[in-house]
Length: 302
Image 1 (cartoon, helix red, strand yellow):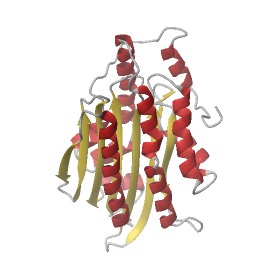
Image 2: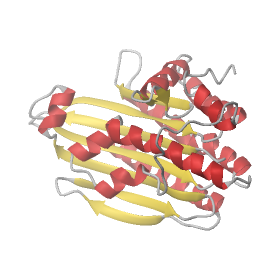
Image 3: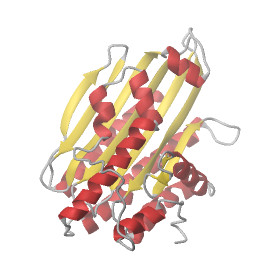
Image 4: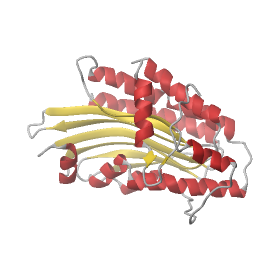
């Protein structure tokens, strides 16, 4: 399974970066192949200063070795070795009318000292973070997610949509990071759903990513914007940074397992602001976004 999924994310990375270069029309992804001293490595691809994407990364990694003590405590295991592979992407567009997007699809195995697999699971998801709210964009993004989920289980969209709303929540701000999407983790074999079934589900979601995001980018990338709207984008990016550094489990795992710092922090935007005690004007588009982020929205029945 690990070889099968790793080969899948290799191909998915190629497909996604090729399409995003086409959408941008100016910049191309720069590739950096790296090795992890403790075992494994990855292939980082970063795009910067494009016509559409100010900064973005579509990274894959496959790392293995002894699970650090701190992560053994986190998983509740002892003397464990691990393998983890996945694709992680974050795209920060230049135009504040185009939303930031994040996605990740991953596979994990734990082994005993004899090398036997003692646990394995899939995880992943994709979520949208707009700076100006176009309701039809949120509806489109969620509809694509639901269509992918419905092919595998009628309850998965609702279940993993709620997981996403719960996970991507800036608790210290009491607001959502964005308008959500899907989040799933610890997807393990059961009597009714095998690891092969999970593979089919996760790859279905992964394959839906371009359909969920690219039409939104194409619709919004030529819209005009003001300096004030750009400032608002950078203020909201600050909340994005706060989530990734304070709450995100993937960032924590990468740092705790001696992952490659440049790849882990690739998700951070290049231009960001923290303005003291900032509040948008009453009745403004900026306030409209904040009001939506206070409570999760049912975008399918919006």
